[in-house]
Image (cartoon, rainbow, N blue to C red):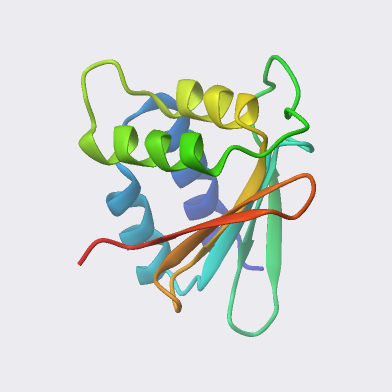
Length: 133
């Protein structure tokens, strides 16, 4: 992958963690740069960004406290997504991620082509969120 796209992916990753860009802004930047999606892996603390030609880059996320709970709570994951979408003053991606891990979310796949996010647990249980229109 070329250095410019890697830099854009790193910028988006850092912006999610420091709150300088919203999820829609991050998605817009990644789409404009040719990415078709990305995966967040809470067990490895990494994100992998994908191009349509199969090329990808994996970046380390900030270290996190705690591990992914054994049981996947789809209702709690949905509640966390609604909290994030509302973007209240107390929202942060770091807190979202901590609470998602507590709800048994091992990671999620963001598909720009499918306009959805698939959250998954350690037992491969899933919760699907479609992008708002």
